[in-house]
Every structure is written in C-alpha cells, then in structure tokens.
Image 1 (spheres, rainbow, N blue to C red):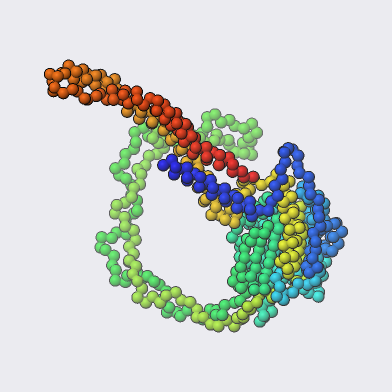
Image 2: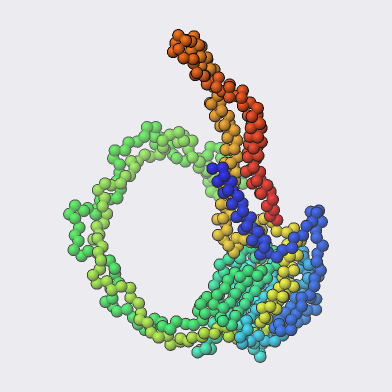
Length: 589
C-alpha cells in the first residue's frame, strides 16, 4: 500500500514537471542571473534589422527621420460630430517608456479620444499572383487598453488613392489586428471580396479565435501579430508565433464567399388551407357533469381561530417616539411634520397585530376551466416552407485568394487610451524572410522585456501552457491536489506504524500469569517423579524454552538486531527522502 502511494505521488510530480518543462522548451527565453535583486541587467542596445530586397514593406523606425515616409491624414470622418470629426490625433516616433532595449524607437499613438490616421505606400504593390501574403507587426499598450483598435488596413491599389485624405471609407483589401472595447477582445481578419457578377464589394469576417486573447490586451507587453494568406485559400493568424485561428477563405468566413445554389422562392405563399397544427383539441370530448368551473381556487379557512395574544388594537407600525422635528422644518412650506413610522415594539413578542382575518386555503373542489384534451391532428401537413428555386445571383469563386492588389499600409483608429506603440511592420511574400525579420526584431525584444522584468514565474509558465491547451488545467488540478493529500496521508500513517508494531510486540510477550502457571505445572511433574507415569518428564514450559533459545542465540540475535535496526532506519527514511530529494531538485523559474 505504501509503495502504491509513493508511486502515484512520484508520477504526479513527474507529470506537472513535464508540462512546465514542455513550455520551457517551446519558449526561447534567455535566463539572466542577477545576484543582487536591486541591480537590473544592463539594457541591450538596439540593432537595426536587415531589410531584404524582396520585401514589399518594412519599417522598424531606426530613427525619427523614418516617419517621413508616413503621411498623416488631414481628412474628416463622415457622420461624426464636428468637434471630433477631424483626424487630429497625434503620432510620434520615439523610444517607449520603460523600453527594454536602448534606442529602440516605435510609432506611438499619443492622443486620447481622437481619430487617428496615418499611412505609407508600399515599396511595390502586392499582387495576389501565386505567392503567400505575409503581414506582421508589433503592438504594445503601455497604459493598458479600455476601448480602442490597433489594427492595420492594407489599402487597395487605386490610381486615385490620396494618403492625405485617408479615412474610414478609403477602400482596403484586408483589415487585420487587435481591437477591444469593454470586455470584448477581438482579433480581426477581414477581407473585401468583389462579386464577379454584380461587382459589389462585401466584407468577409473570419471566425473568432478559439484561444483566449485576454492576456495580450492586459499585460502591457509587446506582442507580434501575424497574418498569412496562402494561394491555396488557407489563412493563419498568429500571436507571438502561436497560431490562434486558421481556416479556409471558402469555408471559415462569414458571410460565405460563394452564395447558395438555391434559395427560397420569395413569391411563394402558404396556401390558405394549410394546416400546421400538430395537436388539436379532441372534438369528441365532453365536460364531465360534476365539473364546476365556478368554484374559486382558494377559500377562507373557516376552522382557523385567532391566535392567543393577538393584539388587534395595536398597529404594526407606530410613530417613532424618539424622532424630533427638524429645526429647519417649515410647516407652511413643508406641511405638517409627522414622525417617521417604525415597527411597533409591542408586536415583537406577540403573534401579530392589527385586525385578524381568517387565512385563505386551497379549495379542494377547485378544478378550473374545463378544456378538451389534445390529440394528434389527422390533417397535420407539417410546417410550411417556401419552395426552393435556383439562385439567380449564384456564382462560384474558387480562388478568393486572388484579392484586389495592395498599394499601402495604414492605421485608421479611434482609441480612448494613449501611448500605444506600433513597431516592426513587414509585408512580404517570403516566409523565410519573415522568420529572419522576427528573429532580429520581436524575439530580441521579447527576451529583453522578460529579462528586465526578472524572468518568468511559475504562474506565467502555467498560464502560457494552458492558454493553448486548456485540458492541462484538469491535469494540474489533480497533480497539485493529489500529492498534498498523499503526503498528508503518508506522513500520518508513517507516524502510526511504530506504535502499531510496539503494541503487537507487547501482545506477543509472556505475561506474569502465564509464567506462574507454567512454574506450577513444572513443580507438579517433579513431585510425581517415578511414582507417576514411571517416565521422566520431557515437557518444558514456554518460558524455559524461550530462555534456552535466548541463551543460545543471544550473540547471534545481537548481530541480527543491529542489522535490522540499520535496515529499518534506511527503510523508513528511504521513501520520504526519495520524494523530498526529488521535489527539491525540481526547479521551476
């Protein structure tokens, strides 16, 4: 039994250790050892990432002059009040507060409750001609976020596009990124699809991610948002390199790209004699003769009597005798003053006060209004539906990947919070280029932020592990609770075992009464001598046998006892020591 408990405890500890170790292996953190907690590690200096030749857009804001490539909008928002219609929110390129990397600048939204719009042309337009579209950038909410967006718009190629007039109605091909208001945390991926038959543009929204997004909006750390749209009509949305939603442009967006082949006939009408009633009252049923519909549901309990001590002359509420008329009370203006009512203290010990009335009880004769029982409708025809006809607007676009080419990237946002940092924008068609860009930008920054905050705690490790694998919560619950229960049970039972063994030994020992009885029997046999059975007595008492055996084996037993004591000390120490040494050797940072 003891061995089983130890095994279960050992397996439990191994499982939780493996779960956290798995997260540590997936994380590429650099552990920084600091002997003095008051001394923070020196900040790494910013190193500009390498910009590949084949990127469509890349901006890591290496200097404040890089903002010259961006255009701040001078437009007004349609349908908004004049006081807030202008896109007059401020943008600055500067080093964020508490930056983990010295000299690392970013594009920062500086205004609260303002419309902001800024955009920049791509190095070359992105055309959906068989290569994947890869978009990624970083966001950090320095002051947290209550309500506001941090998404990007990939503006459609248009010869008339004027970035100075960039506003909410400017045509875009893709909108992508985080958005929050209140408790609603979103991660948008919206693309605009052109109907090949009518030429109308319709927004297609990807489904909500299955993973929780709460921590990305609350931890005030830098997070990288990535979108990949592949030529095979699949897409992936990732945060910090972890895929949070993926799917097909054909199947996993709403409304669907392709309309249904058939629709309900809008001109079809339900016939007047169509019977949709599944059940009807039984026409052959008759009300029983003794059914009285006039009987009330409740009647007065005529057998009830007034409880003894009922105070009919006392009111339940009485004026407060301690209340005083306010000094500023004006009878002419406020009317005659009356003391406020309080519960009558005389009624507290009485069964009741005021006029007593007999209570109401259920009427045993009450049956209510009679209704015929319901039976199956023999004429039931089912629920009527319009007939289906071919959809006159049906089309089939099997390549929604081929979207309108992209010519610019823009941020058109409203936010109730300021100090939102944007950094390390990239638009490319090469996944290897995107990976190298991430290694030189986000991964460096993420490691620096974690090092500057003292590394990752066990709570952070568990949170990261369970974000994408919620089933781990059940495992952690069992693994945390079960070892505690087993340790307590093991320790308690271990303490009681020596006492049990001692009691057992006392039970097996020879009592004084047994020794006296054996001595008497021995003396009787000696007196009998040859006149008894004429045979020498060969029977020995239990105590004499034990004495003989003890005399002969004293030396051997001493050696055995010493060896047993040594083994018992090792045996009793071994299971718990093994577990304790194992637990203390498990180090989670």
